[in-house]
Image (cartoon, rainbow, N blue to C red; front, side):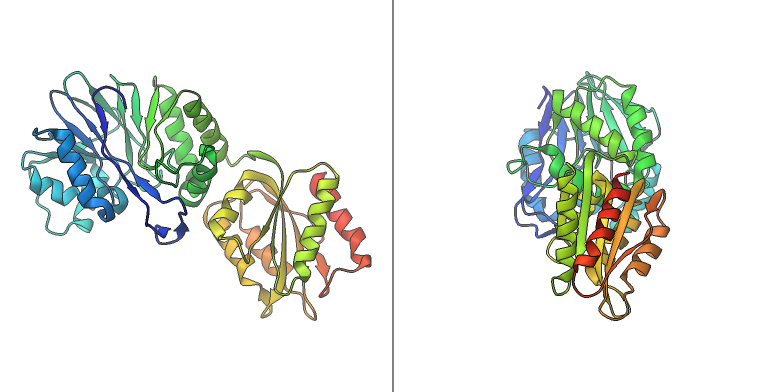
Length: 384
């Protein structure tokens, strides 16, 4: 870290599901930082799971001094769990947060008493620590309404809350930051592209050399430039990758064969294909890839006069995360009363700027030679 900025975050190697829903095979980092100056500012706390380790790291970094400020950028419990402890442990500590965050405090800490110990900041407010001056920028709905980010004018460092975060502990990060950062972004912040764009415009007016997120690695240099480039693409819902996402949900293998056939047709035309079995792949990975590509093929079996649940689950998640600006082809399978196409079309019709190509290709139980021409026509229409 830069001079005067100490990392006191913690790695969680044993967390099975982040936010009780997202698999994190490489664990999770809860990032927290301390700025040493004439006055000391602690930048967020961590999840209660790693509370004892964080307390020790904080006391070691303080080296006998008392912290003056605890900057609360985000009230989600994986970053705020130790606020009440910190206010009891350090009686002279003041909380610095947005007005909305301070209003939320009693929701999480029923008996907390902070009279005279809070500093509500708004857009552009500054706080001097001595050599370091902190400037606060409001970032509502990135991805909660109380969020703010903090720019250290001296260190040219942005403490970015959940923005630019990623899954994984800091010692088990993939070489490709974008891999788990993309899955993190679309599953957690994906719905909030417009607020992210607003924050990017604010950040563009600053001389930022380092970004310190609340999850994932510190970003500098080329890595930071690439992260900003990708966040701009992701938050505008543009296609990051050229190619087609082919997601399928097959009960007995018939629909899988059709999806594999379509994938081969696309590859024969020189198109990159991401082929995913939704019955085997966890949905957050499917959400990530469905966002990354500008075109998609959804192939699903009919089920209980509706849609096979793994496909329904994906489309429900995409709808919730504001999936948009896509061209989609649909394939349904049904042995006696195909219904999957109707349900998929209805789900997609509520999404912004999603073009569903007609007609839906219907397969009866298994793919037959007579089905090949209409699959070829579907591929042609998708690529046109």
